[in-house]
Image (cartoon, rainbow, N blue to C red; front, side, top):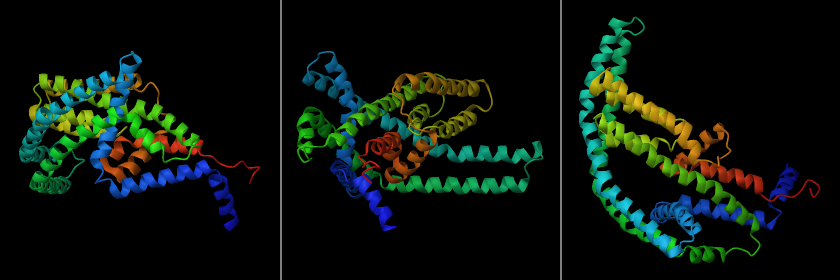
Length: 352
């Protein structure tokens, strides 16, 4: 047994660059697991700066000086951020509060609909309907308690939001302005021979940059184009549902299915089965079809070559570790794992 382990260790860790990669991975994982809450503003700023860097590079390719590109992109970012904080967040929060207030009336309508089912079909009994209604009541009560506990901690959430709204834009500015200085400072701690780590970084920048920026554009476009038909048809909670539909694209395969349920329920309880209901559901399905068949191939021209099973497993694993951020970066992180496995220095079989 020891001989097998020794041969395996020799094959994968005999190269000094393999040891360097292992140290970098272990250090990064340790920092993220132990200091993620303290460094949350810094990590969020790094992600935002990375997203904006792609736009800045596009301007630089048009022979625009970097400081002008940084000024223009950063100004646009601040404008969008102010719109989200001042306009979008209060509107979404208000509609979420309205939805919570209307939940009891929706539950009553749902109860009546379920009670009528046994008379219309023989497949469901009264006992099954009563058990299902009791389960729904329990779930609604749990949701109410969760929202109440969240509202009680609202002061802490507001303070956190204020801190983020000050620190994150400031950090993003310095990350964009002093990008080369910061990167050179980190690289100065690495050995001179770190070509493997550099090559993996370049490969990940090409694939991760395409995916992450494309996903941000997809969230914005899907949410925006969902809001217009919902608002035109005067659907209740149009802004809230549009935001949720936009965010649903983060979770591959599952997000679109999950978000269909609240869209269906809100439209049904507002109008019942009628023309307006079919218009809303029809426009929603058209947007989902356009997203899957046109927008996704257009944005993700450099497709991430991962098997669907690998994508689902990465969403479950990284989402369980880092929550929403883990879900968002699940596919890039899975791509990183794949790139590491492919480029990891190893001894040849002859050396073994």
